[in-house]
Length: 33
Image 1 (cartoon, helix red, strand yellow):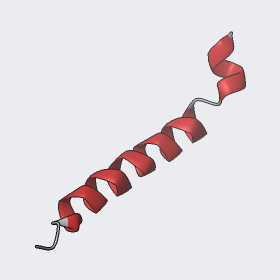
Image 2 (cartoon, helix red, strand yellow; image 1 turned 180 degrees about the vertical axis):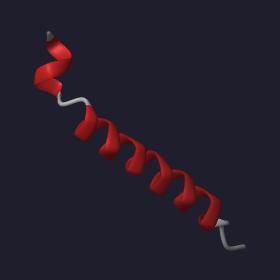
Image 3 (tube, one colour; image 1 turned 60 degrees about the vertical axis):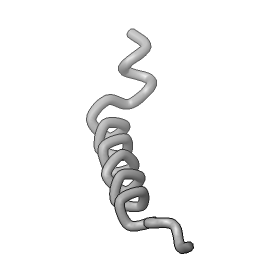
Image 4 (cartoon, helix red, strand yellow; image 1 turned 90 degrees about the vertical axis):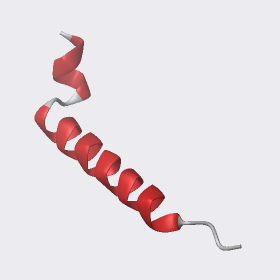
């Protein structure tokens, strides 16, 4: 039985994109202050 990877990959891609945009908008250096 093959695992259904598509929903999982979509979820990971969505979260990684959100994390990437969030890191661009809120750099760790600015978030500290």
